Image (cartoon, rainbow, N blue to C red; front, side):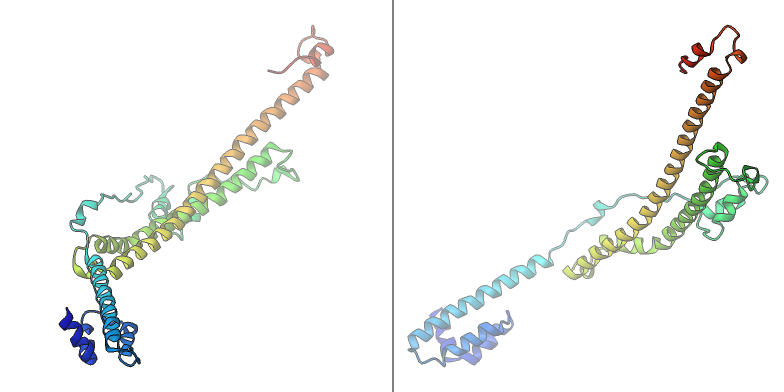
Length: 271
């Protein structure tokens, strides 16, 4: 060790070549070269040179250990593989062309979503007989409004489903490639940069899938909202009907039972 230090002390240029292949730290080498320009004793220079050389050596060991850790990789990645399946295509029967476009839409045909819905549903007319009625005071108008809303949201949902199916098919190649890169055990796809790229790619794919799933969930929420409207209108209609019966019993008891008096009917509780 002392011979080595002495060699470094009297031959600083050779020292650079000795350590260059291990690790290159310009700051450490500059400090080491500056030691021999200081106006101090050779003993002090030798001690500083030794300390700086130890520092360079420790840095080289740390760099080597870090490189070794980064080079390590997990073997036998196949044990992580999971089995997936595809939903497949819709196969709705059509005897009179009543659902001829639904298969195409559910299988990715975005353009025919509206046509498929109208072709398979009963036309509700223009409700001209309702005149100036409002949904707030007309059961028929409330039902007509529900029908219109169902038409709108169902066509939109059909479009979303068609887009979902077509994009899933289009994205299959990218998903397969990411899976192949993930389970690849070659050195090229197991470096630190390669692994980080695979993780980034997976994150992007997850975000894309989350957006598609969000559209489906929005569609389900719309349908559930309209189902709630249907149920609510039904309950309101029943309440209005009971109110009319109660009014009729109170104002025209003779039509119901000659033995009943108006007061008795007015106090009758509807179950």
